[in-house]
Image 1 (tube, helix red, strand yellow):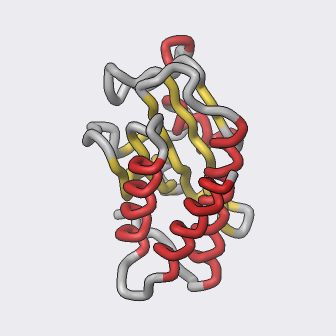
Image 2 (tube, helix red, strand yellow; image 1 turned 90 degrees about the vertical axis):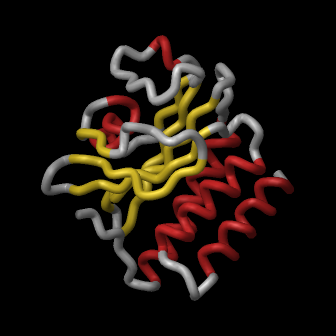
Image 3 (cartoon, helix red, strand yellow; image 1 turned 135 degrees about the horizontal axis):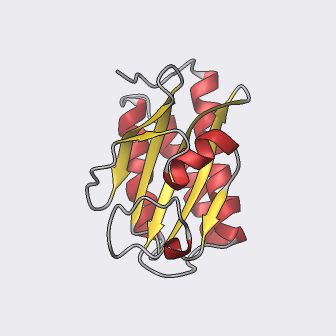
Amino acid sequence: MEHQQKLLSAVSSILGSNDTSLETKLSAICSLLKHEINTYDWVGFYFAKAETKTLHLKAFAGIPTNHTVIPFGKGICGQVAVSNENFVVADVQSQDNYIACNIDVKSEIVIPLFTNNNNIGQIDIDSNTANAFDKTDVRLLVQVNKLISDHMTSNNISINIS
């Protein structure tokens, strides 16, 4: 629990820096989480473009992916865009609607990001370890997203998706 508090404090510090864009801050948060939690092999933020019902990758840490745009409903991320609910996958092979970004990925967690009760995006984490995520990860990532949401809302920041 103490480690989580340190991570949340570090996320707050990243968000509090005034000299960088939100995308730069999100990239730093991705790197922080990937570096500090050894089962987090890929960490990324996707943001929704409601008009086209697509998710767009805006920041990540890990191996580059070809999945920079994901339609709502497709894959775990696309399902979260529709359901607005957390999704923890212990074994990605058990999911019919899974999009493989990397053959080494064994488990995935996706937590929606809300501002003003709107699902504007999500944090997506892949692990090369089966069953890598539990309630502790869910709690941490919900809190990370809340910090980001609060930062965006209080500073009137939105993500530009072209």
